[in-house]
Each structure stands twice: as C-alpha cells, then as structure tokens.
Amino acid sequence: MRPELAAAFDREMDAARAAWAAGNADTTFAFLERAHILGQRHLWPHALTHLWMLRVGWHRRDKREILGQLLRLMATLPGALLGWVPVGNTGGANVPALRPMAIPPELAHHFAGASIARAVAGRLAALVAVGLLVLAGVFGAMEWRRSGLAEDLKARPPGAAGARVADLGSTRRLEIIPLVNWHAAAPGLATEPGVAYLVRTDHATLLFDLGYNARGEARSPLLRNMDRLGLSMDTVDAVFISHRHRDHVAGSAAERSGELPADGSLPDLGGKPLISPAPVSYPGATTVVPGSAGKLFEGVGTTGPITRSLFMGPVDEQALVVHVAGRGLVVIVGCGHQTVPGLLQRLTSAFGEPLYGMVGDFHYPVPEGRLRIAGLDAQRLFASGDGPFKPITTAQAQAELAMLDRLQLLALGGHDTSDEVIAWATERFGDRFRHVKVGQAIVVQAP
Image (cartoon, rainbow, N blue to C red; front, side):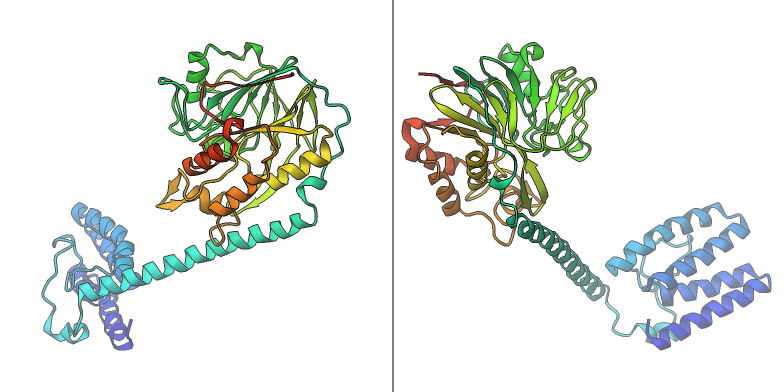
C-alpha cells in the first residue's frame, strides 16, 4: 500500500474507532465504508474493514449483515490473490459484493489509473511465476536427492550385494501365466497398467505381484481374470512382490502404507507367505523380507532387492529366478527398475547356472509411455532413465535389450514398455521372443 493511501486508510479507520467509542454505530459504519473503498485492494486492510463491519452487525443483531460479512471475509484472500476487486464498493451487506460503485470525489485521486484488468493480469503473472519457482524448487530437490543416492550406489554396485546361492535346485517344467498386463490374449480378459503372474514349477506355485486395480473396482482385474481362467489361491504356496509400487500391490494406498487390500477386491492372501523387498501386510499372512539373493523353493529363488535411485524416490526391486533343468535360469521381472545391466550383474554374482530367458517388463516407455500426469509423460520422466532432465531414450532401451541377444527366451509386457520397443524386440529376437499377454501361458520345459 502506498504511503499516502495507507495514511488515508488509517484516518478513516481512526475515525471509525472514535465513533465506536462514542457509541455511534451508524457513524462507525459510514467511516468503515470509506475505509473499505480505500483498502480493499490489499489483504489485511480489506479483511480488517470486514471484521469491523461484522462487529457492528453483531452489535446491531443484524443477521443479514453478519452473514454478509462472513461471506465477504472468506472472499478477501481469493480477491487479493487474483487482484479482482469491485472498485468503489463500500463493503456492506446492503450492496452487492461484486458491484463496482462510484468513488467519492475526495477519494478519487487515490485510484487514478486504476484498472481491474491490469491488476488481474499482474497478479496472475505473479502467481504463475511463483508457481514455476516452487515447481522448479521441488523438481530440483527431488533431482538432488536422486543424484545423491545414485552416487552412493556407485560405491556398492547392484551385482556386489549378497552371497552366492550354492544349491538352487531345479524344476523340469516352468509355466508362467500372465494375469494382469496391458495386452490380453483373448476378449473378456481385463487389462490395465499393472502386473501379475501365476508361476508354476514342479515344486511350488507363486502369485507374482497383484496388479494395480487403478479404478478401485470391487473386483480387481486380477481377481476377475483368475476367475475367468479357472485359477484360485488354493494351490498357491506364496505371494511374491517384486516391489512396492502401486501397479504391483493393488493401488496407491498399499504403496504408501504397505497394507494390501483385504476388502474382497483381491484373492484371499491369508495364510500365505508374502515375500517382498519392502514391508507389506495382509490379515493372516506372514511377511518375509529378503535381504539378499537366496533360495525360496526347490529350483526357485530371488535376486534379492536391487536398489535404484529414481526421480520419484528410491526403490528396491527383486526378481524371481527359476532354474529349469537342462535349460538354465528364467528370470521373471516386475517393472525392471533394476535395469538390465543391474540384473545381469546380480545374476552373475549370485547364481552359477547360465541365463536362459527373461520374462516381464523392463521400463522402456520410449518414445513415450502410457501414463500421463498433468500432460507429462510420467513413466518416462519420473520412473526411468536419470529423471526428467535426462530421460531414457529409444537408443538406450535398444542397447540394453541387445545385451540379452544370447537368450533363448525374451518375453516383454506392455505395462511399462511401449509398443514400439515390443515391435523392435519382436523383429530382433524372432522366434525367441514372446509378447506377454494376459491369459497366454509361457512354458519352459527340460529337454
């Protein structure tokens, strides 16, 4: 507030206080109306006049004035932020709150050149500038945290953690049934940007991840697909969680709290071990948090958690490892946040058997991903590559997949890998490639 305007406002308020002290409510209100005209473009003076008007209305037991002033008090902050105020309005409940009014001649010089349009434009420009600065600050802080963790991880590369698994054992048959993913093998099967598999071996059956249930349906896509495919939890020996992101633990609430939905939207997980790199819980279930690579069942193991620094925060992700006799290791991956190089390092250091195949998603949302938030390519900018300032490129995705040229089996899902990358892998790997689709089993058998 300019000094001359502030002085004029103070004079009117002082006169209003003097009239109030003298017991003259009508004169008090008249001075408050003049003070309102002078101060309404500034937050505290504007609010102060309405507080005093409310006081006068209460003294008069004037219900209309009391309600009117309460409503006008709530509008003072938006008016100050947006710069939109009806010039000359006297502020009482006896006049419409949004009506511009004639300014008393002796006060008019304080409003020379006043323009509501310019005031609104100026405030909006200031709000946009502040918003951009705040957004830049948040992005900068998140990137600083991500880069700091990434530097820490360089001192302990993914392949260096955990003891070698001496005797994993083997299975003669492995069957992987995709239960949730982006594409389906047949009409009637639900699809969504989440992941779940049923993994069967000679010795154990595991439910790998729980999908997303992005719409919060009473019966999740996972549950509906299991019913349609004639599958139940009766034969499942354990639930394997690749990592605690919403598209793998049935929603954002479970991602935040670790409490898996027990509202009937998922199959009943009670009585099953929950093998997860981050704590999760479910009524009646026991939780196992592997600290490193290890054996889970005969022929079945885990890579143990591999830490990755993402822009959205650090994540620990594990992959399921199955040894098929006479073939080698088949690795089942949830999102692939570990990266292909990270997985290869861990597999080399922790397991002695050769690598036969990889099945799952590897987070290659290039040239763009499937999930957008506020118009931004969230999968590519925030959950892969080195953050929004250095996102993953198509060339990087192709180079990583080329590291798997020796494999006899590569199966990619579309939940976080683009159709373009899937098409490229189809051409490069030929009959060694499988497109992960809900309901279409992938089987590997001993020779």
